Length: 390
Image (cartoon, rainbow, N blue to C red):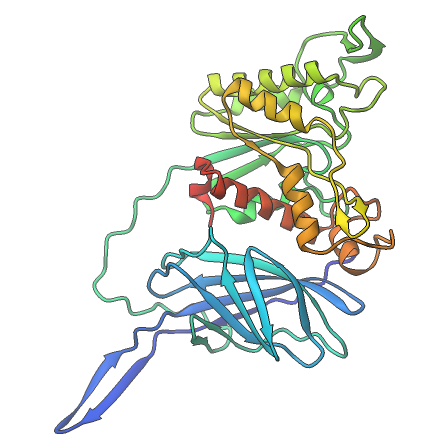
């Protein structure tokens, strides 16, 4: 599915109201927030489309928000994520989720949705933020009147997020696009993401590239010709700094029965423990992630389809590190987007906009949503890395 990008940016400045009465005229600043909105059509197909929306609060901090806009004739909204979206006639209202209602001055919040269209699929011409119009053109962002200046908040220290995984996480510009390639967009400028995920790798072939043989030992594990680590892991070990994070997701290729990719369950947990304990010893905070699900339907319901889920959780518990159950969360996302049932054609419709033509890997729009699932889990599980999210 070829991504179709049509961004629109709308800005609003703080307003002035003038009240007349009795012997004179008094001027007062409106107590309404200013806002900026970027609306991007990320993918489009016959009769349907996906969109990302980013709202920037240019006024006072808010603890809850609603964004409103009008649909063009023939447009509709079918599913949404990171916001509750309702439609009444042509009026659309997006309301914050439980974890993204607070938006500081100058901060942004994003959500996405899938929709329908016929005839034309224009971007909205205007928006409202908590009832205030975000009117205007694409001029530079205005500086809202906020009263007396306040000292800037102390900037959070820079942090690096290291990533290890397979093709569902790896960087790519065309299908398959891993969710790790989309993660940096969710963080503030203080975060650098170093994604070292590689397609086709089990945890053992990622760690010992070139040294895993095609022969199994008596325990049924692939033997190593050398215990020397791969260059990607040694580069991480050399680059780790205290306060960094390590996100690890394996388990999709590890179930291969043949070497070199085969990894048994005990060996899988052992190697996750090696990565977690080594990172912790350097002051790096590991986060283990269960393997993301492919799209498998049982009637109208998406169901789980990966192994090594329990083993990932067990390794997290054994090493005292957090685990994000991306397997369960991704299945829940597919069900919320109503990607089941489908006719198995992964080149059209909502499922084609989400997945490559193999039911496993992601188009850019799907990868962004999976990355959003990860960031939602960081917040919900109070993993400290969440403090760097936009």
